[in-house]
Length: 300
Image (tube, rainbow, N blue to C red; front, side):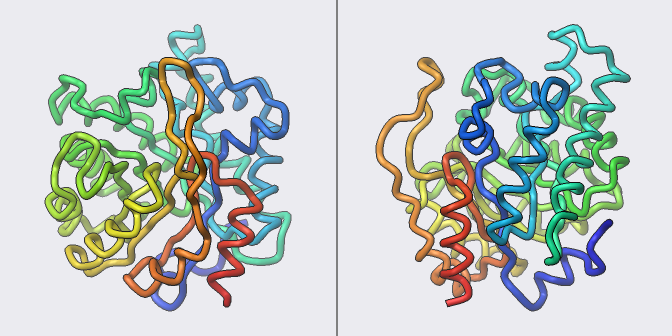
């Protein structure tokens, strides 16, 4: 059952806690994510594991669940021999699994259908670089079918997330134009620029005139970079800000492993909220325990 309020209405008066990284929770449950489809493989092979991972977050207070569709694309499924009709069903299943998990708790839980970048489908780390050599129109053609399928599945919001450059942001905003579902636009950044090197003020401004956009911000980045980005997003947009950084560890695409130390500190949430953040959570390597502490810090 959908929440009685829209997420946009909730953001008008409060700060809402997102979930954390889905893949790290699946790994903690013993799932093998070495496949190119990453967590999306489990939509077919282990949907109960995905629902259990979502449930782990709602039990600690997460009120928005981001679906397992980040790396789920028609093209990616086709490489594995999955026909288009079956692929559409798997995309829809990602929304259903999150919805079912949300119904296991009494507090309101909204479902955000993840729309990851083109680079996520390539599974070579290029979502951390952007600039794929495709035009905005080509990127729009890639994203539109998946967007339409996810919209038909009935999420509360679309999460256009881990966007590495302004070309892909423009393509995504074109793909969701008139879709009838609110969206948030979230860039992956390095320092005070997108992964492709554009200034954040320029990147955030792209969404200023998009009626579907209810929040703009950053994810899948260093926690310290998120601090500055929240202020930049709030000053440019005048809309709620969404922020959910990584643990602080770095992903080595060649070795397919994480390196470095975790620097995610739930105590940062006070500064994020003061700067305009209304959707707060974690991305890669941020688990249920971290989200529980973030929620406690928010209440405190």
